[in-house]
Length: 225
Image 1 (cartoon, one colour):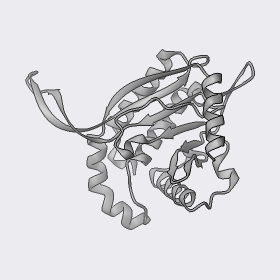
Image 2: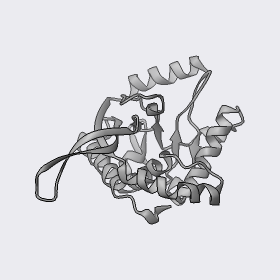
Image 3: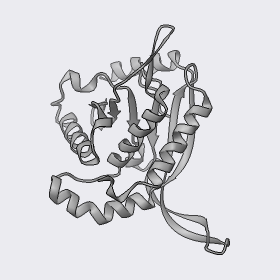
Image 4: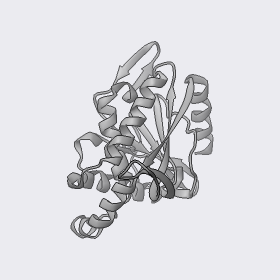
């Protein structure tokens, strides 16, 4: 597995013109929704509700809005993928594997949660089939689960972009008050990074995609569950 990962990562660096952009996203609204709905959601579905399904949901909408982020490269051709298949990197004791949630844009938040939890559990138990780690069109990696603030992930070929999710934690932020004055508030925030293939994607598009994720997560509807 280490040899395969090494080969894949080195080949990606040699293939794609890697550039990484960053943004900070306020998860306070999502944190409140999650806290208020968590017990009800877990009782109804039997699934643990983490932040990742909210992120995946926002990503699927972002890929629909910016389809080049969901494309791939074949020789001198750009292939625009109709399917949105989200790979989520899972750290194992012996390496790394990326199970894929197929047709993620067709799933509700609860559907994404079920698929994510099932794939991650079976990945750690070595029970994934080969088909379940194939045909991904976009990848998310979550170093934040280990406390990392941000990173510059390597693109998962033949995809053209990968999202890195930093630690979701409480931070002091300066916010405008009701009368226009500055106030200090405690907010739940995370840094997101997007590594993209500059051969295909310009920085403006990648940054617009990040801005879309930021707005979508920060205005996530309470009825979105």
